[in-house]
Amino acid sequence: MNSIKIAPSILSADFGRIGEVVKETERAGADYIHVDVMDGEFVPNLTIGPFVVKAIRANTSLPLDVHLMIVKPDRLIPEFIEAGADKITVHREAVDELLPVINLIKGLGAKAGVSINPATNEENLKYLLDYCDLILVMLVNPGFGGQKTLESQVKKLHMIKELLTREKKTNILLEVDGGVNNKNFSTLVNAGADILVAGSAIFNSGKKMYSKNIKKLRNSWKRSDIKKNF
Ligand code: DX5
Ligand code: ZN
Image (cartoon, rainbow, N blue to C red):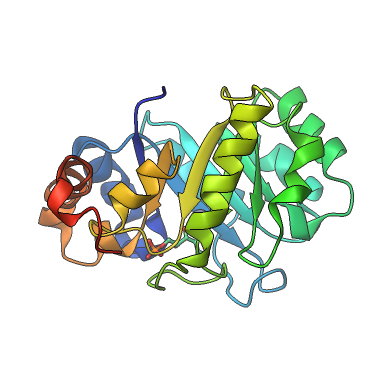
């Protein structure tokens, strides 16, 4: 089994001091930096591009987990990888033909992830299992931090985990994103999550708290008394 990883989403961080935030997040014990890229089209919100990813890269040696919530991701993938992205995740709903996009990412030396929105059936992932390195299960509708996890997605996570086991694809990492906190963390790990993205649970309580918040998430997995509280 893979060890459980925490990927703080800097969407909820202070962009005015993003370099410092990234350094502090690394010192606080994060495993990845999760970067949410939004284009105002695939999702209603607009965030950052490759220039900012380059600035983040200059401030950390942690792997950059870049989540593209954009249409036509192939236009920008080479720039994001050049800027320092280690993993690039694209949305099933954003492209008709995902295979060439996955091949583009892998051909440029990055790991390729595929994400599905809450309304997208997990069957859509089946034909991609031979190609992708990671599956990102959205626990909220993408676009904004600070939303509540949709409980229906936990069942889906279970089903995807079973699918990976059945198809002998346990090398594919399972990542979850949206509303992760210390109440639902253990439920999500028990359902199969290897990487847990967390934005507001880490960044919404002041810069001195990052390390404490990351520790709280990790510890909540070990605490059986809060396992049942979603
Ligand atoms: C939502 C983003 C998430 C989000 C996570 O579209 O993909 O990464 O910012 O933030 P929280 O943990 O606050 O839901
Ligand atoms: Zn994300």
